[in-house]
Amino acid sequence: MPIRSLEELHALYPEAMETAVKKECQHLLPQHCAYIEASPFVLIATAGPEGLDCSPRGDAAPAVRIVDSTTLELPDRRGNNRLDTLRNIVRDGRVGLLFLIPGVGVTLRVNGTAELHAERELLASYAVGDKVPATVIRITVSSVYTQCPKALIRSELWNPERFRDSADLPTVGQIMQTITNGEFDGAAWDAGYPKLIQETIY
Image (tube, rainbow, N blue to C red; front, top):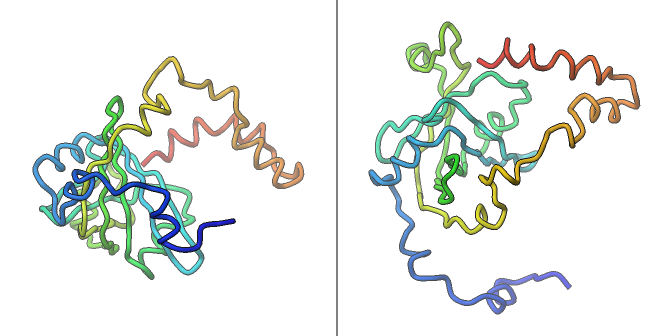
């Protein structure tokens, strides 16, 4: 039977560790900023009328700019234009961020509210060469805390001996070919994808 109440849930777990409760802050400390500045990769979770979304974002570290102790900015680099994250933010600003740093087990979690900005000077400040993002996500921090490394330790995420060869997994082209019952030329897509990535990375 599924668990239907908080009482049932809490009966299965001991009380939260004191440090797990006390570590949560409502603003960024200098120590939190050190994690953000070292992170080239962040996951952003959003919610909207169509459901939930969790999107990976990456850039040369830092992937996210620290404006002040309660404000972060994330440029929306070129993607597939599904706009799942952005549509959600326009209609429901709640966001959750998870920062990862290669080789480091501790992660940083930030929750808050977000809005989109497209002022010309702001976009220009995030230019890479002549490429500017279409929008910038501005996040107002409501809570921030570190996450212990147990999940990364158990998964051995940063252990190179556990890295997988992408050749062992289906390609995007193969998946698309299956979805379209063979109408999509998966082999041609896969062959051209490295060049497409190079031309559209920013």
